[in-house]
Image (cartoon, rainbow, N blue to C red; front, side, top):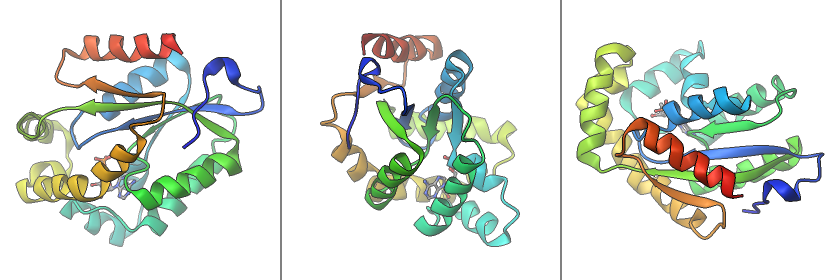
Length: 197
Ligand code: AMP
């Protein structure tokens, strides 16, 4: 995956930032904070899919499994196309496997996007489980409330997402962030890295 520094931007391409990591690591929270500070659009495939009216999508999401790549790609492409005006994009939850990473390169090409940072939020499984259990009290998400769905999400992460993250590690703008810190410290770490490039 090709990554440019901010200074190298041609002016024609739009910056995009990727958050990767397991369920409950804080991708959504940090994406939202960064979105508010930069004005870049927060693109959460989980949110986009939850907004879908399709009963097939809804029932698949309840189980914690990853949805088929073609369904996610279609929903994501529609979303990007209808938000072309945004000055930049923050991706939270996409790509999530090696095939999606390839498709993402095509999206970047088609829409003139360039990856400037990849942030991997590292959090141990016991902490993730506790966070999601707590979040289930207010999130209203069936996949948060059901321990079996949580386990399925972790299995999917280990089997499909983790190898993709490994493949990104050599990118020069890939940063591993300790996601167990206080929320503000995580944000500071992210901004320190953004300032560095
Ligand atoms: P999230 O809100 O990121 O926790 O995602 C919630 C659920 O949406 C996941 O467990 C999957 O079922 C589905 N989902 C979100 N993003 C993707 C993706 N990139 N590929 C496949 N399924 C996804």
